[in-house]
Length: 353
Image 1: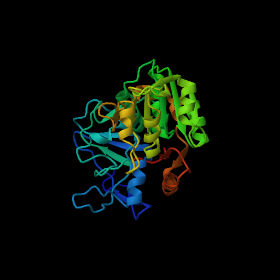
Image 2: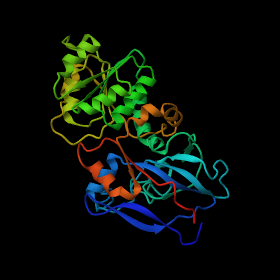
Image 3: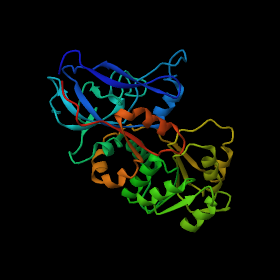
Image 4: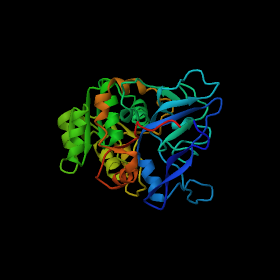
């Protein structure tokens, strides 16, 4: 590569806007690898940072602009002399939490929404995973959010005979649905207020859906999962596990009202602050509340199955937007109801200088 080579990098700008800046292209050290990014998804965390104008997670509470993107898939274009398990041409996904300089795209020095990404201390199985050449880059870019969904399912400890309700048919809720069905779970219902999302839920394997804007969730669940009782003997649906991939108080309270004795609620959606949550109501069912955060072990646990079931996971992508139109990509992601999952794609025609 030529000395003083540059690349484009997407950063937070003013509130609700991104900037594309020209910066120096990184040079890999002896233990590093350099990736040419080929696709990168936009996550709700990205939109939070964009809406904030940067990250407010600083000791003094100030907002600091930062590089964006933590869902990249790319191609190795250079490796350091001490890197033995990667080669030029390998197609890889990245562990954003494996970078010594900070979480990629979430407050660290590096961002996956750049033309090139330095993988520090590159090591297969820790910082990157290689995926098959026939897996499209845009689907591979789902690896990180699908690891979030997989951790949620692992936390639920769902068994084949369980009956499950997933609230929220966004990318995480749909990913949870896919993993539950691949795990062999008997009956998975998805609830949402957007009919198009519910259609997608059925397409990826949900056994039934509930339009929670129009239907009585508890009554419909009783039809689907049979009748049980709570700790007071009151009739309740036979649903074993509730999963909140929406993060709103209404979901929590609907679960508390519907839960049978011994049911579980797994929260993977980021909860909005609310005084409306009925914690005391959990006593009526001895409801177990489980929080699911990130992917302590799952980031590459999902990669092979993502490739194997690529057609099902590809349905989660609603928009593929070229990098040249990255401002439009973020506008879509920031506009409620405009898009479900936006993946930015990078041209394959860039020359290696």
